[in-house]
Image (cartoon, rainbow, N blue to C red; front, side, top):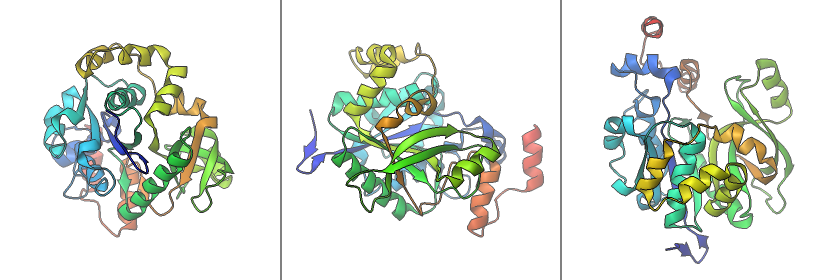
Length: 311
């Protein structure tokens, strides 16, 4: 059944929680006693990064229209943290096949439920400092998709420093009829550039790629079929979600940003999400930078982390 309102398709959410988070496992081991993926770890508060992600959806997307994808091996960690979601809304991948299949599987699940839906896709392991500004940015992105249904809208954050570990989006010309939204066509992606190149493209207006995207499900699948026809066809032909999951283990691993989005620049829009205070918290240094801006001391000792990192 297709779910629509008088103002257009309903907004759904997909939360990506299938990553391994290997770079931060020395830190998560120090905090929890186990090298768990960072999205399940309470790094600097009472909630894990996954629980914080779900909380940010309050007022944006109801739980009934929220899907999450997790690894089968992570179910003991994930299940209690996803207790607010219906069991059928937790999509389980047999193993990690990188972000391409990790997004394709829940998108196809959503397409079978609500093929005309608009979807917002969220990583579960990032930090957002201003939740109100973030929700406002998602609403602006959703409005852009309503007016430009053939576009995929990405959130871009203003870089705070030239970080070679981040992905960058290079904006082009402003999107017509999008005055006041700071929306631009996309010229190119630059994934994890050297420090000097990062400095140069920031000077040209490059934005950090937050890896948050809003688009029509139908449009995303059409573009994916053009570039990954075998993967989409194989999963889409499955008779139900269980069959799709079984077929998933045979997919090749591929990266959603570099293997798909970077080849679709003409179909993309980047929305400047100023003020959300975003970080991917992919390194201890990134976490400590964030905590320093908040005037907080990291809940671990430098010497303790050094020992954990060497273990």
